Length: 385
Image 1: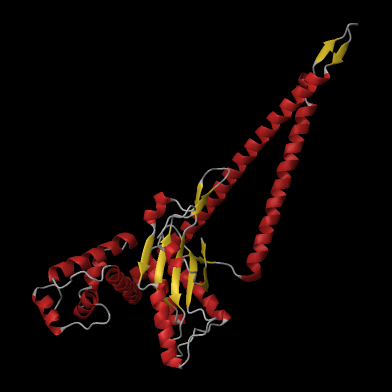
Image 2 (image 1 turned 30 degrees about the horizontal axis):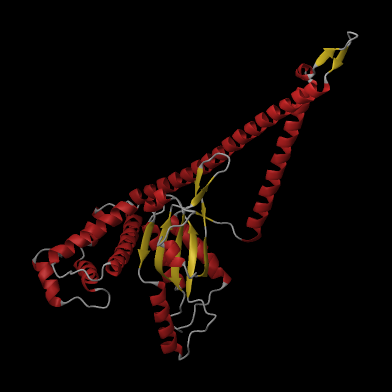
C-alpha cells in the first residue's frame, strides 16, 4: 500500500473537523471511537507565539501572506499507530525543522460502493505543523528535494510504499482510464453478441405470435409480437446488467485481495530479514533496541504533554496519584501501539529519565524538578536510585 504526505495552509475549521467537535454527515459515527487524537497546543495559541517570536527575532511583523501553520493529510493503513506518526513527527522536526503539534487519526471516513454496497474506508491522518524557522523567525524555505524527502520519511516511518510522483503518476492514471474504457467496450460487445445470438436462435421464434385469418392463413399478430420482444429485451438487459455488476464486484475484490497479499508478503520478507540480522548481529540488535526505546520515549513525552494540556488543573502533589497517572499513560500507549510494557520498565530504569518524566507530568515543561520532590520520590521507591 502506498502513502503520501501533502502540506497546505491550515483551514479555519481544521480543529473542528480533525477532533470531531461537531457531527459531519460524511462520517460513520459507529467508527468514530476508533479515531485517535494528540494535541500539544491549539492553533490560535501557536499563531500568537509565532507572531511574537517573529517580531522578537526579526524586528518585523509576520507577513500577511505567510503560512506559518500548515496541515498535511497522510495516507495510512488500518494498522498505523500513533507511535509511527509520532516517529514521523520527530523525523520531520529533526531533518526538516517542521514541528508537529497536532495529530488526528481518522478511521471513520470513506464511502459505500454503489454497486456492491461495501464500505470502502479512507484511512488517513491529519498533521498540523508549525512552519516557522526558529533561526530567522520567518517561515521555513524548502526546496523541491525537501518535499521529496518528506515523502521518503513518511514511507519509512509508516512502513509503507512511497507514492509515485510527477508525470509517471499521471501517465498511470491515463493508462488506467484507457483500460477501463476498453473493458467497457468489451462488455458492450459481449452484450451485443449475446443478444444477437439469442434473437437469432429458436427462442426468437417463440416470441412471434401467429393467428389464423378468416381464410385459414397464418398471420403475425403485430401488437402481441412486439410486446413479447419488449419483454424479452427487458429480461436480457436485466440479466446482462446483473452479470456485469457481479463480475465487476468479484474483479474488484480479487484485485484488493491480491494487493493485500502482496503487501503482507513484502512485510513478512522484511521482518524475516530484519529478525535474521537481529538474532545474528549483536551490534545491530543493540542499535535497533536503542532506536525502539527512543521512539517509545518520544511518544511518552508527547502523551504527557497531551495529558497536561487536557487536564492542567489536576492536583498532582500526591506522589501515589502521580505514579498511578503515569501508569495509566503508559498503559494507554501500550494498548494503542502494541508496545510491550517491558519497554517502559527498561526506560524507567534510568533515574534521570524517570525524574524528567515525573517532572513533566507534575509541573509541565516550564517548571524545573525540585530537589525535595526528587528526594521524596526516591525515598518512597517510585524512582530508581
